[in-house]
Amino acid sequence: MVLLSSSILAADFANLLDDILNAERAGVDMLHIDIMDGHFVPNLSFGIPVIESIVGKSALPFDVHLMVDNPDEYINDLVRLGVKNITVHAESCIHLDRMINRIKESGVRASIALNPSTPLTVLDYVVELCDMVLVMTVNPGFGGQKLIPYTLDKVADLRALRENKGLNFLIQVDGGIDTQNVQKVIEAGADVIVAGTCIFKSDDMARTVELLKGRGAV
Ligand SMILES: O=C(CO)[C@H](O)[C@H](O)COP(=O)(O)O
Ligand SMILES: [Fe+2]
Image (cartoon, rainbow, N blue to C red; front, top):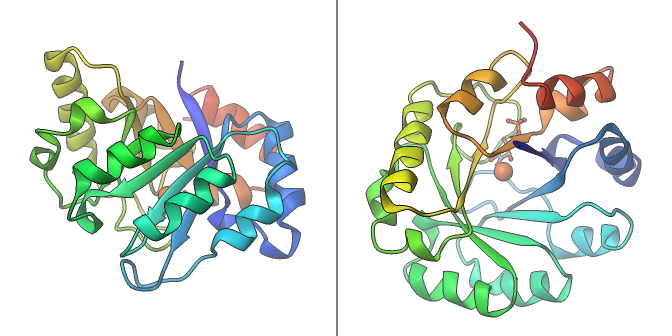
């Protein structure tokens, strides 16, 4: 079964809780929470206080995607807030092994994200530790971008790598996914689809979620 994680980056921040509850009612499986620091990526989103304000108000698991230079500064707060998953970028972690172990020892699922140009070889020695690997299908930093086609080859290669190694981490795919291309993304090997703009800017969120979960419209 493919899971759908809705990126609140595209929500209406003036009505954030309403948008989240609408997504929950529409049937999304997770809330994807993009933290950006204006350094690792050229954009700022929101930080811990905003997450704190929605904790306990939605039953959805919180799936945090850290696009920051110093992810270690966020881990304690995210653990305290009870998030389900923390994703760190391989490109931002000098001590990636230590970071993944630290998250897992805190009782939170740990994932590694890769920018479009980052090869899968960075995972060679640590993929066994991962609960999930996030393949970015856009350059991180902004919602509403177009999916970069070659990144789907990476998703397929990651799927093959998982099979060859006999592992069971999830494959999450993030960026530019909509009802037109979701089928291709799933065929490439995604287990968890992230969608922001397509869900929160939709005129009919329930229908869009239904289409995404039913693998899209032709
Ligand atoms: O990590 C991200 C951007 O860096 C977002 O999760 C991603 O872009 C999802 O938004 P959209 O569906 O609008 O592309
Ligand atoms: Fe994201």
